Image 1: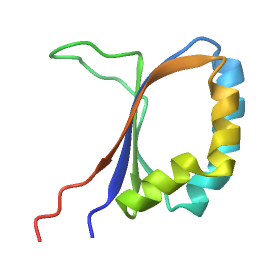
Image 2 (image 1 turned 90 degrees about the vertical axis):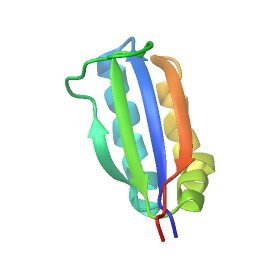
Image 3 (image 1 turned 135 degrees about the horizontal axis):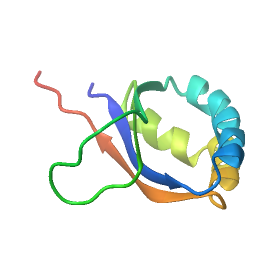
Length: 98
């Protein structure tokens, strides 16, 4: 079964308040088996446009990635993020060669 991924590009307007979001999303991420592959860090945009921060989170399955996003726990965390950051988030199924 292919894994699922969140690919996010974010601009953070209030880094101090964003920390509240990060603390609140820990429980739903743990519940749905999330694992950070990329969490900020230096980058070079070589084509197109992007935002200041890139995050890639791996889930055990595409369904787990969707379920986490729609969960009550994550939506509560997201409510903390919305006023202090803006961006783009895509949930995508991974490639399975099998």
